[in-house]
Amino acid sequence: MRANNKRCGSRQAGAESGGRTGASLYQEITDRIIAELERGTVPWVKPWGRARTGLGLPRNAATQRRYSGINILILWGGVIDRGFPSQNWLTFRQALSLGGNVRKGEHGTTIVHADRFVPKNEKQRADTDGDEPQAVPFLKRFTVFNVAQCDNLPEHLYAAGEPLPEREMVPQAEALIHATGADFRIGGERAFYMPGSDTIQVPPQPAFFHQIDYYRTCFHELGHWTGHPTRLARDLSGSFGSNTYAREELVALS
Image 1: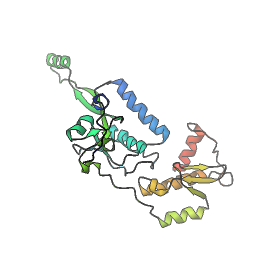
Image 2: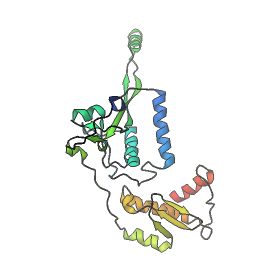
Image 3: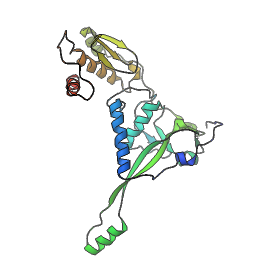
Image 4: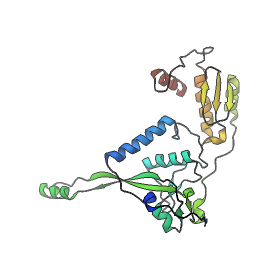
């Protein structure tokens, strides 16, 4: 077990919470996903990041059950944004029950549990009318913490997921990229084509969650590269959200 002199954070910060439900919670989750889409940080938009583990399905470290539905996207976002080395998560109470604690000052990640219930008046109505009672769906919020935010847990719970692989060459893909004559710059955390300098920038291959995504990204940017005035002379001036930008993205994706 890992020992640390810092004691557990406040129960208020970490305990499961029913909190606000209904429309406000739906809107909160929707806004969060939209924000990640706009930043390009969800794995199918930006298949690389600071995460130090492959993007397997997140799981509850206490029960070993995998999270599902929208919670997968939420927890993936947490791993990517904060560079956690593990896909294992716990509630505040689960950390305590395992002999550990959430470190003071750590901020949890809100996930949701969807369920249904039959209100008492609906049961009465159904009995009166001879109908089946109609269940009402609801969401309940929970706060979870990555095991990297906890101390004193059993050592096996800290085990990192499969490490990101080193660079793997795909000869055919490398040959095609070389044959284009495009000026590739490898490095940084962004992928883009710069028309002014006629250069392509992509992160190094080990930064990608799956090796094939490195080449997919290279060929996507090569799609934009073909629009240079000396090649197919497409309009590359569109800003994000414009029709011109959307049309150019469709070209690069096709």
